[in-house]
Amino acid sequence: APLDVKLSTASDWTAEEWDAIVVGAGPAGIIVADRLSEAGKKTLLLEGGGKSYGVTGGTEKPEWLEGTDLSRVDVPGLYNTIFADRGNLICGNITTFGGCTIGGSSAINAGLYFEPPAADYDWYFPEGWKSKDVDAATARLYARQPQRVVTSKNQKMYNQQGYEAAKDWIVNSAGYKEVDINGAADLKAEVFGHPAFDYNDGQRGGPTTTYLQTALGRSNFHLESGVKVQRVVRDGKKATGVVANVDGAETTIKLADNGRVVLSGGAIYSPQILMYSAIGDPEVLSRLAAGGILGDVTPSEWINNTAVGDGLFDNPNTFIELEDEKVPAYTYQYDEPVKSDVELYLKERSGPLAFAGQTSVFWTYMNHTDGTSTGVQGTINTFGYQDYTNKNTISLNVYGTSGLLSKGKVNIDENFLPAPSDDVYYSDAENRDAEDIAQFIYNLFQKLPATGLKPLNLPANSTKDEIKTYITKPSAYAAGMVNHWSSSCRFGSCVDTNAQVIGTDNIHVVDGSIVAPLTVNPQFGIMVAAERASELILKL
Ligand SMILES: Cc1cc2nc3c(=O)[nH]c(=O)nc-3n(C[C@H](O)[C@H](O)[C@H](O)COP(=O)(O)OP(=O)(O)OC[C@H]3O[C@@H](n4cnc5c(N)ncnc54)[C@H](O)[C@@H]3O)c2cc1C
Image 1: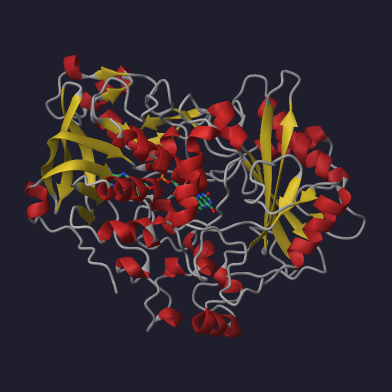
Image 2: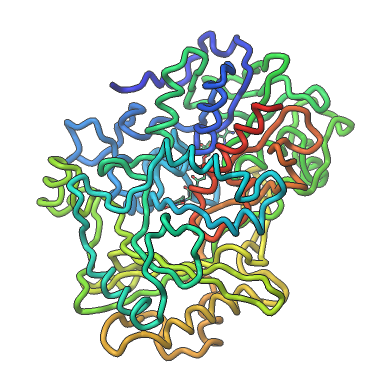
C-alpha cells in the first residue's frame, strides 16, 4: 500500500517536541531515523524534497509505466535518463547534481553497492571506527539491505558481452583475479568481477524500501517531506530545535530537553546547515551575518571552526570510450525502450531494464615508496558517451578513490548557496593523484589484447604524460563532477567519534560528510556509517 507521506501541511507535528530531529531523508538520514525510533526515541525526519519511489507516492514516470505502482526511480534501467530529464527529483539551484527527494541520491543513483575493504576503516577512520568496530554495523546493513549481483527476478544476466570482452583484457591479459566482489570485499588489489547492487527483485531498493518502511510502522516516528530546514536553533552549545520552512512560513520545531539534532543533508548541504547555524569558518559566518542569514545570533554565540565544509572529496574520473565489434551497445531510453524489454520488465521484473547497465568493475592500488597507496577503480557499462555512441561502443569510467591527496571544500557562494571549491580534483602540490591515475590507465593500455576492446577518445599508444594531460584537463570525458561527495565534516576536526559536532552538546552530522574517501563507490560506506553512528548516539 502507498505510504502516508503527506506533503507539508502545518499540522500538529510542528507543535510537538522531539527526541530526535533528523534533517534529510537520504540513505544516512533514513537509517538513523529508523534506528533511533526503534530504540524508542520520538523521531521526526524532515526532507526538503518530495516523493520519489512509487511506494512513497511518487508518480513521475514515462507513459509505459502508467497503470503500475512504479515511478521512474523504481526502474533501474531508467537511471541514465535522469541526467537529461531531471524531473522534480534533483536538487535545484546549486552546481552539484544530486537527489533532493525521499531517499536522497539513493533514489536516483546507479545502485552500485560495494562493501568497503577493511583497510579503508583501518587506514582512514579514527578509533571506534576501525574495521573491527564497524563489523556489526556492516552485518546489520546486509541483514536489512542485501546485495544482488543478478538483478533480474528471473535470475538471468543480460547484456554481458561487455563483461566477457573486459575479462579478456583485465583478467586474461592484465592478470587481475576474477572475484565475487562483496564476497571478497577486502581484496582490492588487481580484482575484477560483476558489480553488486542494492536492488530488490528487479526494482530499485535501498533504505527507502527497507529501513523507512519499518520506521513508518512506528507511532513514535514521523516523516515530513517538502520541509527544508534552514538552521539549528541553539542556546550556546545546545540545540533546542530547528527552524524550517513549513508551507512558506518560518517555523521553529522544538527538541525535547534531552533531544538531539542529526544533520543528514549530505556532504554539500550538511556543512551549509551548520554554517547557517553559526558553526563554521568565521569569515563565512561574517558574510552570512551581513546577509541576514544568521537570524539574531550574535558573533559571541558563533562556534568558529574552519573544518566545517573542509576536506570535500569527489572521485576524479575519466571516461574512456571503447569499441569492439563483438560487443553490442545497449542504450537506455525513457519514453520508448525496446518493446520486448518493456514487456519482460513489466511481466517479470527482468531483462536489461532490471539494471542500469554496469556489467563489470575492477580495482587496484597504486603503491608509493612511503608505504601509502592510492585506490583506482574502473566500471564498464553498456553504452557509449557524448561523441562516441555507435552500436559497438561502451564506456569505461576510471576513478581515483581512496588515498588521494587532493581535497576541496564546501564554499558558500554570493547567493549563500553551497558550492564545491575548484580544487576538489588534481590539486595536490606534487601532482601525485594525476600521476597515479595516468599510470593505472597506461599500465592497462599496455595489456590491451590485439583483438578486442579499442579505446577511441584516448589512443591506446598514448604515453603516460599524454594520458596525464588528458585526464587533468576538464572536458566531457575528464575531471567532471561524479557527485560522490563526501568528507566535508571530518572526524577529529569537525565531528568527534560520536559524530557529534565539535563544540556542541547535541548536534550530529551523519551522512557522506563524515565518511573518508573510500576505495569503492560511497553509498555502502555511508550506510555503514549511519548504522555505526546510530549505535554510538544511542549510548550517549
Ligand atoms: C547520479 C548519481 C549516481 C550515483 N551512483 C552511485 C552508485 O551507483 N553507488 C554508490 O555507492 N553511490 C552512488 N552515488 C552516490 C550516493 O548516492 C551518495 O553518496 C549518497 O546518496 C549520499 O548519501 P547521504 O545520506 O550522505 O546524502 P544524500 O543522498 O545527498 O541525501 C541528503 C538528503 O537530505 C536532503 N536535505 C538536504 N538539505 C536539507 C535541508 N536543509 N532540509 C531538509 N532536507 C535536506 C536532500 O534533499 C536529500 O534528500 C551516486 C550519486 C549520484 C548523484
